[in-house]
Length: 94
Ligand SMILES: [Zn+2]
Image (spheres, rainbow, N blue to C red):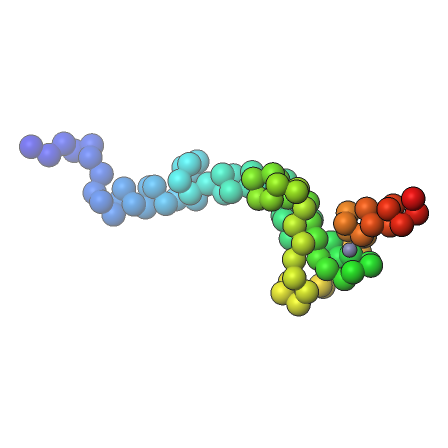
């Protein structure tokens, strides 16, 4: 016995994939949990020329990630001295 209320499979798929409805499977809100993209947080060091960024401790225990030269494009990145170079400079002054 088929119920009249049960949707056809095509209607069901169209209903579930409708972006206007607030389906948790298709919503973009789920993917926007980060406030900033990680690509925007990567900076170029003035001293050594490496690209670096601060990362959470489950990525690296030192809370710092240094990327090899020539892998990530430098267009649009900000220049800032990396924590390693600034630490070395503080040691030289002392
Ligand atoms: Zn550096």
